[in-house]
Image (tube, rainbow, N blue to C red; front, side):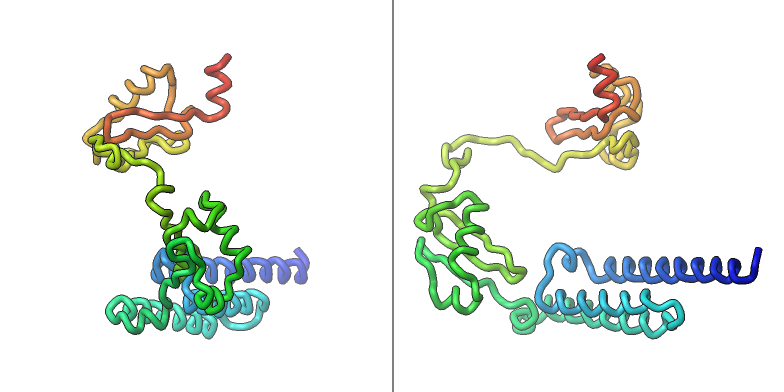
Length: 242
């Protein structure tokens, strides 16, 4: 192999190694920072995420610069965010600064003009969010609140809420969290053991529905009432239909 080809191959390997190191390092930091970073970004979370992303991208744009400084910078930002999150849990005043407060935009069907101006939300945006939640008329809304992460939560007036069993005085059974037993053709033995079930029992359930193998099942779960649900893969459905 010519020298330049060997050198080029080595460069590609080094580049891929840099990408792998940065990727798994950011994955580790994301785990440490917590799921709230993904599901609920406050203003400070957003700023930290942008800085971390731009810093990591800069490290990937050059194959000669060292990774040590980048990893220290990104790690320091992550530690700062973790510390800030812990402090905000303990001190409510700091939490108000970091995460801001919910702001009421609609109260008893009436728009609060000062709140709209403060949040810079116009009427079209607000009505769009209300329509997405099924409310086309302001008179249906008791409260519309802008949450710290930017979403709008809605409490409809009592006459516009769906009737519940409690409203009718009906008793209901307990409904817990269903248990996944098969996922993409793979049996989840941990969930079977947690519910004191065996693979033999699972195979019997599949045979009752004329399913020859768990590999044909996309998902199978059991609810707290003992009801067994399954969904076949497309190929298995076609075999069953034929």
